[in-house]
Length: 178
Image (cartoon, rainbow, N blue to C red; front, top):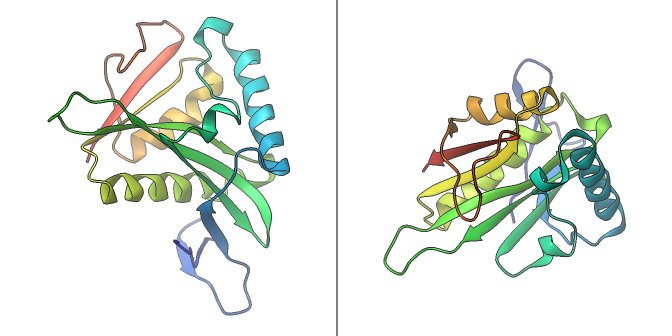
């Protein structure tokens, strides 16, 4: 279990004092009440900003699949965000790949570095599993610009559709070689 003992003060990461609150990233249940609500908000936003056939976000039940690892970030028990790593089917003998799913922060946590902490945690887990590439799909609309910038800052580059995705003018596909 990874325990994060840093906080972002708006300019850099600092170590927490013993009386400061800490952000914890742990495996969690997507059906847990507050998480279910955050995921429902996420899906509602996806359908409000993208055509229905271009929405690839997963609901809480799909995020409970055995091929998916799901985490939340919490501070003093309060939900700050969530993210998941889905293992992708690979032909036998080929490199293993994963896909980032359902990255979302609460409105009150935005701008605090929570998405960066979650992304780093997911990528560390992917490296521990010896995955060779991590992919993601996000939207082309302005609403998704902060997500695209986050992923680009961490080395993701645009790529062709992967897995079962197809070319879609509303989707951007990105990959990171680990």
